[in-house]
Structure formats: structure tokens, C-alpha cells
Image 1 (cartoon, rainbow, N blue to C red):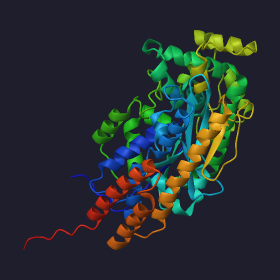
Image 2 (spheres, rainbow, N blue to C red; image 1 turned 90 degrees about the vertical axis):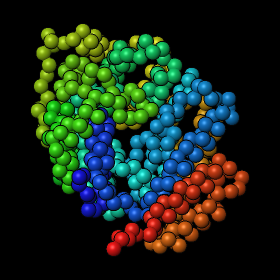
Image 3 (cartoon, one colour; image 1 turned 180 degrees about the vertical axis):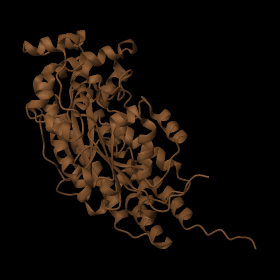
Image 4 (spheres, rainbow, N blue to C red; image 1 turned 90 degrees about the horizontal axis):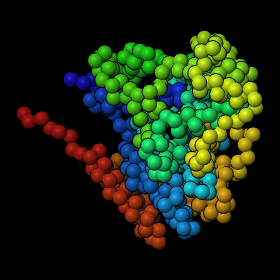
Length: 469
């Protein structure tokens, strides 16, 4: 018989990209699924919100695609399915409005460049996921009173390994482009290495990665003792079973070695990010593998950025320079380029190069992106898109769509759900306001949300089972 969890288990994960963040989330999702009877996180109110999240999930994306189509852009639009989900993409709490959660989307058009679009919604939408998660602001999640009851996890990794992985990573925007426009025979590790040559030899780029990472860990180290569990990526890779058991114990659940091994088998060196099919680098994910690609000049930049004290405070060895006689041919080419002030840029597909260029997790002040302030619900954050008129029209469409969606959730969140009549009136009120009218795309989704929400209410207030005497 599987264990029963006696209280809400509300996990929250914070960690920088490439730190074991997705792996930790996946471990926790498997742990949650092991419970025989999991209390409903947030009760009926959150359950109703979740039904409308599912129903409205693609509405903003639908309006964005319509705006591009009005300019004749359909087949060349690069818009990964992960970002078409309302809560898809990197997430964080808005600094000046912590009741709002922000979601970063990446949009590109072949031959025209790309831009990041941030949307904001009530933070309750974060709890439509089993595991609330964010790459940003570790202190903010700890300080917000509404997350006081959450069990807080953090992922860490040697910053040197994170930086190396960041140079070889392929983001979801580039992944979508590769899936659609790059011949399968070219979709291999040689492509990653070619893209990485630029990131490793443009010292401004590498320093931008290091500066961003330093800022994150400086904040994290101030509050790390307030996390219930900190998981090292290296521990999960080298000793997955005890590491998974330790994560589960933080969730008040004992997991056997066999069950922990089963969880790891389902996660080990696999792609875990849905439509983003290039998040995992085949043949890599090995502790210390950075020694085969970074060079001493990178270690000097890491030290100059002030990361060495952070590395040691996190419990890793101080920086030790590499024996250049042991360099791989790839390292020798990279080191020679850096020493001669040369930036290697062998990628002839400039669309791919542009889409693969980091627009987050990078201190990008040295790069000429257009940057815009927030409107009420959305922001174009960083842009190198060629046509500002199209960019503005898409942004306008996203602002209107996000406003409409937020009006639906605002109406739902304003109500109480203690009794059946209250819950039904809340849903019926939303149906009356938003389930008909000129915007049929929204109305149809609202009606679907209302239908599934009423089914949830029926289940929630079902009559209790009576034992036969």
C-alpha cells in the first residue's frame, strides 16, 4: 500500500538554469505522484482556477499568431509549443506587484530576428503546476507570506559547470527552428559545438553569463539556510538513489532504494522539457566535463567576475587551472582565438545563430537589444526584431489578450468557494460575463472552463459514502 500524505504538499523550486533545476522538479513530480491520496493544493478555489487555466491555455498564443498572420507571417513564425502555453516559459514574481507572476515567451520569425515577450497573470496560476518553480529571485520567494507554508527546494551546481553548460545549451527558440528548418543529418553535437564557439570566444558574452550567475548566487547564499532542501546536481548525477531519497524525506515520505532507482531510470539523461527537444545534450551531463571544453582564459574570467569565493562557499574546490598540454583540439582552437582577440563564428545559418543567442540568463548591457518598459500586463523585454511595426502590433495583441484573460481570473479569484452555491455562482458569473460576445475565441474557451469547473464542483460536493450496516 502506498503512503498517504496527511497534509498539503506544496513544493517550490528555485535554481539557476543548467543547475539540475528541471531534474529536481521532475523528481518532485514523481514523488507527488507516489502518494496514494494527495490533498488538493489550494482547495476548490485553486481547482477551479486550474480548470480555467487548461481551458484558456492557448488563448494569448492564438491572438499572437493572429497578429503575425495579419502581416502574412505564418509558416516562418518560430514559436515553440512550450511558450504557447499560458504559464509556459521562465517564471518569476513581479518586483513591484508580487501578487502578479510573470512568464517569459520567446518569439522569432525566420529572416526577421526575435524578441522576448513577458506576460503577467495572477500568481495563483503558478499553482496550476504541481511544483511552483522559478530561476529568479531566491529571496523573494522566501519573503512572500503567501508562500510561507510551501516546502522550498533549491538546485545548485558548480558555477563553472553551469557556465560551460550554458555555452553548449540550445534554447527552446533555436530548438523549434532546428526541428522545422534544419536537416536531420545536421542536428547533431557538431551543431552545438559550432554555436558554442562563438559563446566561448566572445569574451563580452562569456563575461555576461558569469556576471548574471554571480548576481544570482550572491542573493542565494544570503538565504540558502532558509531552504528546506538544497540539491546538488553533482550529487544527483553521481549518487542518484540517496539523493532522491533525501529529496523525498523533505516531502515527509520514505522512498525505498528500488523506488528511487525507478524514478532515476525515468529521468536519467533524457529530455524533460516537452517541445523543447534540445535541452539535453546527448553523451554529456557528466560531472567535471567542463574540463574538456573551457580553457584557462575562461577560468581567469570566472575569477575576475568574483565567482571564486562563491564557488568555495557553495562547497566546491577553488579554481585550479588546467594543464594546457592536455587540451582537446577544440580547446586549443578556442584558446588560440581568445589569445588573438578573435571571435569564432562558424555558423553560416544566421537565423539559427540569432535564435540561439541568449536573451536571458545573461547580463546583456553590452549588446544592442531594444528594451521597453512594462505596460499593464505585458512587456517586450529584449528585441532584435527587424520590423518594429509588426513587433508593436504583436505586442498590442498580447496586451489585449492578456488583459482579457486576467479579467476572467480576477473575477474567479474575487469569489469564495466554501459552499456549493458559492462555487456555482462564481463560475456562472464568469460564464455570464465572458462566455458570450464578440470575442468567440475567448468565449468558447470560457465555456469549456465553466463546463469542467462545474464537473469539479459536482465531484467536490459529492455525497459521502455510507457503509452498509
